[in-house]
Length: 252
Length: 252
Image (tube, rainbow over all chains, first blue to last red; front, side, top):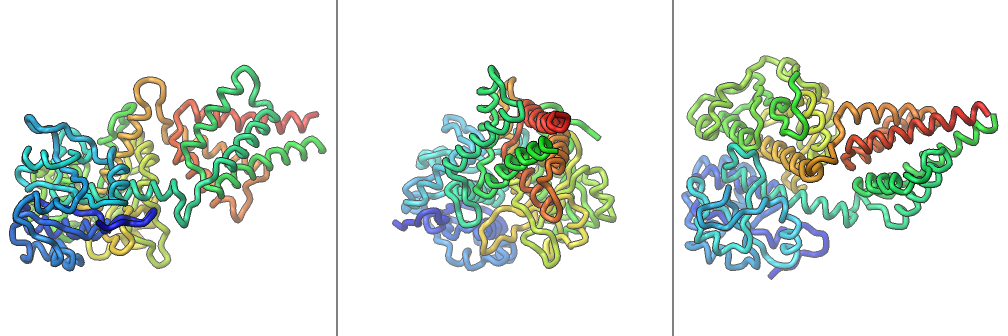
């Protein structure tokens, strides 16, 4: 069991598993999509031949990933290393479980993958995962799409799933405070809100009885925006400038 | 100019434009990706032949969309109906603009598309958009990916972009949730930003040379916050009050 550190992308713990893929071009395109998004472990269950011209062409510069793919005879073997398996399906199957949008669970899946291997399981192009396959999954997911034609090509589905994890990871890093953007602290935000309130009272915008609820609305606007420290400094600079401008006017 | 109502998916105002696509299979896969995500307007600039076996196969059940594609001889013609054009590129080009992650701007793009046509512009497989193409775009975007191999296949890039808009739309619908919160329109936001800029110039906060970049930072703060119409009114009320307070001071 490999462990990914801190806020690092958990590449070692992410497995894409394809069950009986039928088209070499799709397997190649899956390899490229994985490499684009930083996933390297490809598990294949009874695949078609994929080292064909079409497969290698779609794999583009990720043939290394194709070559290192692990091949299994059963779904059970392919998902054996995973502490959690997410099965992808387009819509609810007869007697099957109801899928949840993958974007709703991506954060949790990522948390799991920071500690234990996780497998994303995709079925054959024509028929998708069977109910038997889905019964081996801890979660059943679908890719958010339009309602009229939600059935994605296999490689497109893998790309969308991996991309969703990337977005969740980026959001987390943004919140945790990665290298390029460090979120403002609670102290900085409190100081900003106090400063804002004082200025708004001073210009006569905040008055009872609506003052408290307006201030709550404004806090909400800035809370949703997830300000970084630099942005807090810019906003406080504006507040200071308002005060300065009023003082200048008063003196002239 | 078509207008999409309320919180509806703005299908009529979303255009995918491909510049000189080289592979029929990719054009077909783009059509399928668009149909998956509920986008139907495909504009092609000097494309390869795409009604080939490979193209039709990848298009799967979206051949109707391929057949209705509009074909143009120049980028200018292809983007002419669009009030806003977003050019996609992998990374900063020499002397080119710095791309912003598309997931950061998807909410704003969606707001714009609720009122006016918007075009997502993608370059040829081998070389991507030229600097000349990018100069015709109001925004330059990249698809969030891993850092080592971020160059997506053309159809994968289109899928990721369209999927990002779907996620933004879903988030908005979730937040708007029923009756009381209707997100601000692009027009309301534009008016807010103009008003903010005027006020900041007036109080002496915005000055060249840093004025433009500060204004961009402030737009980003409010864009992330996804303001509703009521919040825009509150913020503009504050701006009016600042002006009023300065006038009062001047007169006393």
